[in-house]
Image (tube, rainbow, N blue to C red; front, side):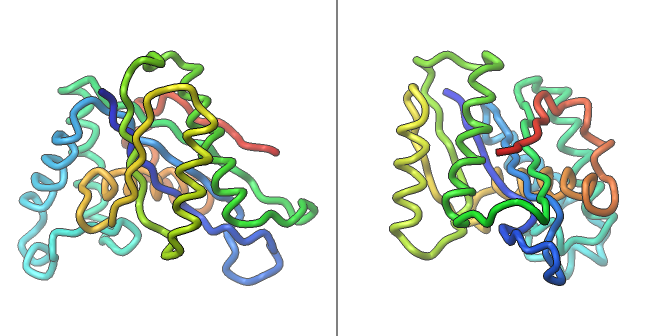
Length: 210
């Protein structure tokens, strides 16, 4: 069995003249065999926090809100775990927006780019079609119909035993870790760069241009 945790960074707006609209949108997967290893990373990261941070922290990590020191502790613990366990892979797809591009329906674009990355990792041969895959994504839409469409779209696009779970960020350690990785890769393209801490473990980094 394989577990895939997914997160996105950037926004789905395509009007680059609008203040605050991101220049990029990306989807990131963490693929692993033992999701409990991801739980351990955050527990260890919390223990390793300076006392002044730990006293005020609730133990739920939202990476963009964290202090720089906290971010580096989490990412370094993550890379140590990869070296030790050797069962984790990072895959990401980056979409660079253009002023001249057509405007997409947000949920259609989101579904398309997610399926694009899912198909891409099949091409890498990381798993066989007969493997059971548990695909875990953060709940981002409160409209149940959109979530149903997302699940049906992914299942219809790949030929494998795919189970999709939509979970809340605050109860899934795996989603909090992929949030950290996705946000850090996003910084590489938009602002700062935490990417170098774990770049050696990114096995797929593709550009989406549809």
